Amino acid sequence: MSKGEWELTGDRLVEVLATLASPHRLRVLAALTGGRTYVSQLARDLGISRALLQVHLKKLEKAGLVTAQLELSEDGKALKFYEATAFSLHLTPDVVAAAVTTLSTAGDGDAVPKGTS
Image 1 (cartoon, one colour):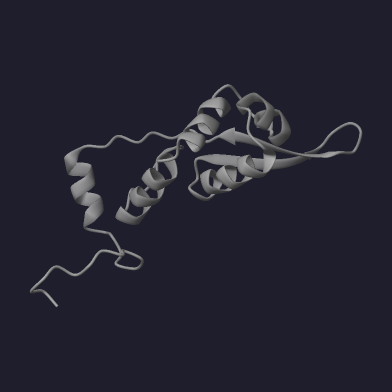
Image 2: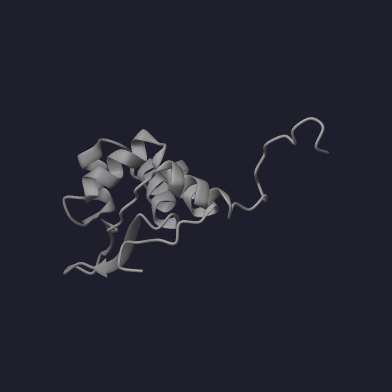
């Protein structure tokens, strides 16, 4: 598996798609395609609070779509830099069908179809 490629299990597909289902997270990811930046600058660029941005960055990081690195500025101030992770996601019906075979049932939340319980 090359850099930026994931093992696309059903659970991984659900996690990535759920993470990308937020307009805020899409904007954050798009902003990071221009290069790495620190939280305060990114919040200013996007016109959202740092607190809200942190929530979205944590979800993007958990899903493996961004990475973070803490660095010290010249004046000794700690800055957390984020950057987009290189990835490629190509969805086809066959890819989805293969991923579905690996779905776990934990947290599914779907009701058991009538007559199957």
